[in-house]
Length: 480
Image 1 (cartoon, rainbow, N blue to C red):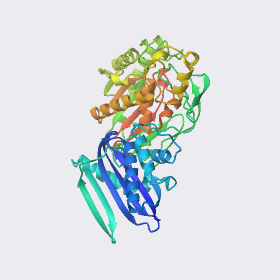
Image 2: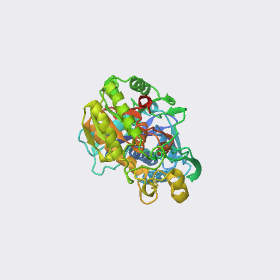
Image 3: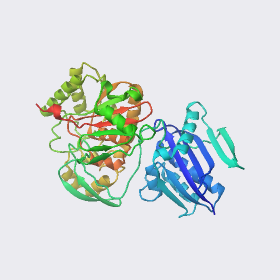
Image 4: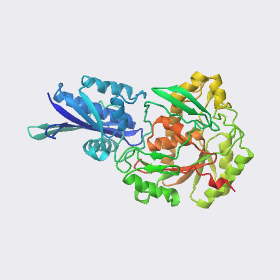
């Protein structure tokens, strides 16, 4: 009975975008590479490509010895944790791939280990070769290399039945836009001062109700903001400068974080080229904000209060002093358009309205406080706090649906504004979602962020698909 090591990786340049995977089967006793697999997958997402790489590696090992034991090594925390059974798999694209991978060998014959990206270079190289071939026009690229009598037999080129998939972790990788991670306890801090407990998948959801409930926002503690990233080398890279915590990032992440912490025009890292930089401005207060009421895109569409207009004036003055904004894009809702118009008057710029930047629709909860929702719709609220795919009562929008919308807007705006600094005037949930996607953080991280009215954050998107995040949440410019 053989013993093999499988190393696998996958990538998507755009998430979704041109994607490919690489997989290597190694003899555990000798360290000899026995099989290499690579394939271009067409336009898919990061996580699916990683699963396609895993599946290819397991199948190659099974072809060598169906009775073998296999130790899988990947730099995808998501795949390793999900296949180990510690994290749930809910994304519809990943469930069947994970189930298929689990069937290649009998239970107990495959183990999983997360490794740093630099230890997964062979699979990463193969994934990049596949993506390079696809980008250059070889839409059916597939390559197989196997050791034969001390040499290597190699076959490569177009195939007619390329499989759709996605993956993370490429040199020209992208911030993971869809990591679907639900682990153990959901500790939800939804942005008010009221504490309640609710059942969550596998644990307890602690809810701290909603601020202006523009979203379920959260209390970001003064602890440590951790970015599980590999920026210069790959996927989902996000360099972090968090004013309420400390950033754990290494190598190129730290370099990018320092560049963002001391912004120049465009807040861009010069060694990575001029990024598309989005300065994210939450609108000023409305009459609902101090009352901490849910206020999404399906409610009364309130205008700014007098305090909110003053906040917008101060934000505009502060942004004018910085002098880096080149264009303004606003959500279509009244409070954001009013905030954007006030800021635009300070900057001398026009405002473009983008419907995709609207706030989440909170359904029947619109206009209610968290306590009122708890009293009237307790089961729906508990489900919502436990699962970002759950919708508010009355057919509102789930946070998962909001994320799909925001990812599409992000990709469109990034392509349209490369090398420019653009002000996005929007709401709590869209801003948190931009940040979550850039960091490659799990969906439940939405419940652990808090944004003040008229606060500012920034994300720089580079040509290689990586992102640098600056979580300013800075309201000092709003005080006299």
